[in-house]
Length: 305
Ligand SMILES: [Zn+2]
Image 1 (tube, rainbow, N blue to C red):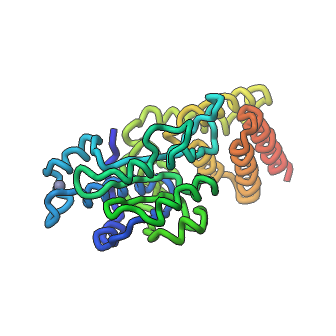
Image 2: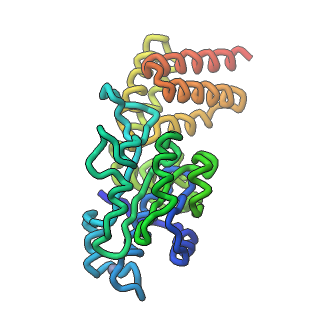
Image 3: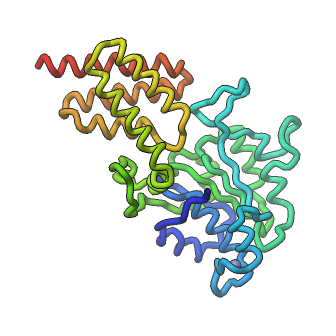
């Protein structure tokens, strides 16, 4: 299912006037950066430039079917070589430039081929995950791209991207989106303006409610016996790693906001340590158990005061 594009009028106005070969879309995740990248690719390729994107020409129809020959999207893979799900996604050099063990047509080769319509548009979502080696290999292409090639880099911030890439691109900034979306329960993403997450929750209300209830039961269990708390910790860890549609850490952080200020600050710090441990490939079960023990200590200490 493709989510609808909401908001970002300012970014879209800027894009209509830009004629750059390399763009850097920066802004928080799940606000719609990738959807705007697709919209822009559609705009560039529309066959009726006076009312682009028209939505009716052959090019626009191919976009609607997610089958456009001149758009290619790359995003970091979540799988490691051993097949284990990685929490720190990586972009492979071979996906960008020709490598012995890479795919037949890496992005730079694909971008050099003539477009069927007006422009070849290559989107690299997660440009902050590019290693220095991968970025340098791709820079050679960015230095002299063919006139019909457009590259859109997507990242959370300018600072998160290697300076060599930043210096060759025009930044387009994305803010949080303020959208009224009906949900069974309030979602912390509303505060963060992450409209993609809100739409996902609205599209899958049962999965969203199930996720919320896992978080809710976990926090209740913290006040009960250790065994029950650790059982709920396992359920939380499972929900966390298995359903990437919802950000469990964010749901948990929002619920911790109901704690008094001192314990809240300590709880959020413990959660951040847990997230760091998970990103560093720590055993997820253990990381969440450590979090559970810390949160229990915080709660107990606050009761004694
Ligand atoms: Zn069109």
